[in-house]
Image (tube, rainbow, N blue to C red; front, side, top):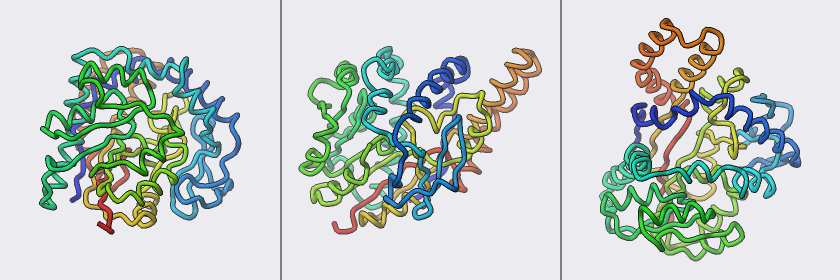
Length: 346
């Protein structure tokens, strides 16, 4: 099953902060990138372990990135070490502040606009293969405040649970989906968890790109006979990434913070073959045109102010965002993809 495109209406309200607080986000990114550049040089590709060539690279916001000659994955040229991850996600990083202010309305909005469409895609794909999703169990790794689990419960799925490394986010989830559904997990215990996990579907929504050792994780997944399906959402080397590299005064959305590497269609195909997976569902969509809209709007306001001409242009451009984005999505040049895999051995 193949699907392309998604309405931008679902993200406009959620992304307003990127328009209004560009300078704040940019200063924070500069600090994060400076810390990232202090880490050891990355020698091997995150996806295929091939030696990284430092000759073929491009620069975005003062960080070098290289496309792997073997699998096509985009790698930042520094390691995402444990120290770096603690700097990005740990206590004092401010990362938890993204979730601490969640109220009931905001939680419902994000579940409805972002996560219910994801789960609906999962349902549609399984139905195309005559699989009743309600008869399956699901485990959401890196569940955050429980948005995806909440969406699954809204659709009537009973056997759903997950894990999360942030105790703060687990506490938030308990206010909305109940206690005991999302368990705390440390990085050190991850492989043991996946090795013995008893579930039909393993989901990683915006998580695989944050794992320090994704190949180890997937190796344990491969040999777990209980897990039949893998559902992932990952960021891509996309149109917006190239544009971000040429606009240093605008906060980049794709290559920032914990995103030190990005997937490509070819690096995903490499994983598919390596771990003996059958791709049964793919949904390509992105916010590349929304990013272009944001880049132009923020840049114009800096030079021209908030005048009538700019407002008129912004209002007119909003009406064609989805039409332009669909072309990019159909060419698989979008900023995001959802994939549902089934193990071939099953």
